[in-house]
Image 1 (tube, rainbow, N blue to C red):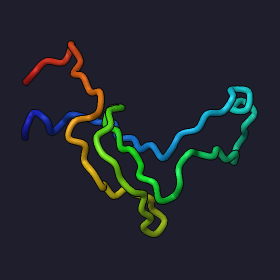
Image 2: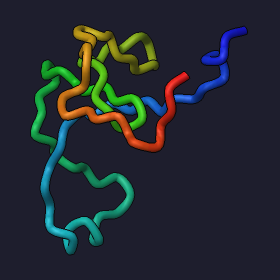
Image 3: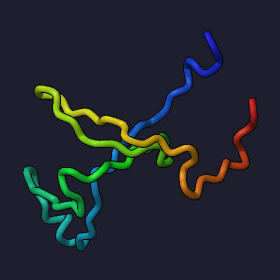
Image 4: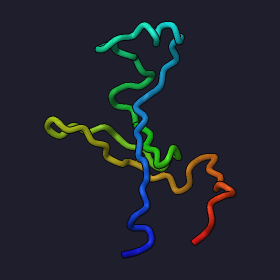
Length: 88
């Protein structure tokens, strides 16, 4: 077992973005649809702990949704190590 085996990473995928007024957001109810600035064929952004690490494509397998990684970012744009992180 290596020291890295028990480190957790939050993974998130950004499908698209939009801007809407807060009053419109507050009026939305269950089943409301928010239109994004992306098309079905656009790449999605994959984040690890809120840092961009890759891009990918959405894939459907039966009733499951997944992401196929199309590009791994060698270093996230604008990434700066935090001062409070110590080296191993």
